[in-house]
Image (cartoon, rainbow over all chains, first blue to last red; front, side, top):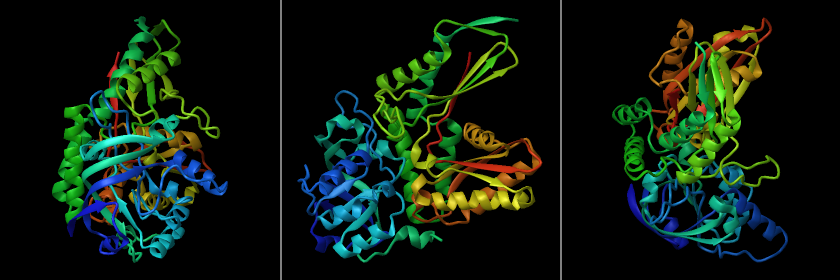
Length: 180
Length: 281
């Protein structure tokens, strides 16, 4: 099924998404990848506050190419999500409700998705040029010293994605090619 | 006949190749992606493949990288033994070309200077440079920037000779299956069979720089390429790992002599953005 998804969304809306749905996302999402996740986890371990509010939010695992002058962003496709598996269960338990990336997730992430009524969406890997057209605004929120790995806030319109793990734990990747 | 080549020419070739291949795929790979949309059976798979075709168009028209992972620069240099290199030291010239391409070309700087300390080098240097002395008086520069979504899913197997071709097939299929959606299918699968530990890995990488519709000159390997492509596409992983009949665009196998005790097999996974370009100086 193809449908629209406005983010941030209530968990009640997320519950209506089913693995295999094609969604066109509009709204606001955060961007973070490896180095930013490490910093967030270091803060959590130290009992310090985070620089972003996670409740009901989305994190897109991505590190863009630099924007040409006059452009909003460079190429902006998803990176492999499993590298963020070390942090995702903690962030989900703290309120994160949507993750966008590509590739399989760990058992711990699956469990945290179901426990929190969250969802995991896949953007199309290697389609960074097309995806950049769906990004209307991009701002560095923090960790600018990390360059491509900084935390960003994006405003997107009709950003194409596919529901891979829905809030019940159904996993499209496992259905098409089961892990051994 | 002896011939002088200024390394500034090599620097310029590296720079222009790295920018070009990041904005535009070679025709062999681009047409393989486009025609895959016709053979794909799944609707979601067709949609992914048509998005990838559209992506190539946008990247070329707007000079925006095809993929945000513009890779670590892998540079193969074949230097004729009758060439006398002039000017700046060769590896400095290559790295200067990389620096200029990634800075002036708005490409992502994806290299950290130390694998543990992990501070970004800021200009995507250093490159991975493979230099080989060949016959003649020309210099061939091949650039193949490699993204790590697929690199991370690559493997080397030290098989036993008795495992033979069936062992090789199992190793390739196991690697592709484990790569699944992580390595951005449809894949190009580079395979190196023989040599030793590092030679097999190098051959697998070089296999990715072959035209993807080319065949091995070794008959059993050419047959194996066809057979493996069909078995990989029967796995059902499909475009973006969302299910379908096109999991790989090509399997390229390079081979070499090996030791009586060994059968090294390296599988270098590559996503559909199999970037490679060549200039002969």
